[in-house]
Image (cartoon, rainbow, N blue to C red; front, side, top):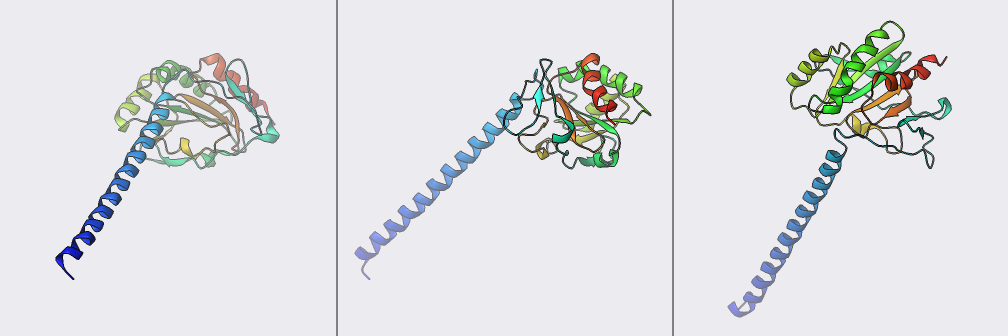
Length: 219
């Protein structure tokens, strides 16, 4: 084969290689943009005032004017697997509390609304000790447990918190259910481990009790 005939082949191979490299670069850019959008969406839900999600479609839940969403007993969905290490490094599985009403609070030590509501959670959780109610925190986006443990000490939080720095536990909730979509978020699980109520805003003592007491009263 002459040098003249080999030249077009080399040119074609170079063009194909350049095309593949360009496609790979575009794919990387798309992936980066998608990751950025996902991160931005997550940041928008972080430590905000929350919002209301209606009960349209087949969701079955209704959001009141107070921002608390509730579900009738017959339409509730079981919470996903919520297990892992606590801030103290111990193993905890929320399923082990079936038979009790469980209050799940998603929080971070860096979150000002979380700090505002913490004293109410500390107070109400102690009042319900021994009454068939278990409080569990889900600590998220704290890079280490040091700040989170200091937060608990400062506010007198004595119940356990799962350590979830990347938010993977929150992502286990199915879309369209009463899932925690903001920080702070609070869920109340009934005695069968089903989500009965949700708030996407910081709670004061009155609203926390308003969420909890109807579920405790169920037989």
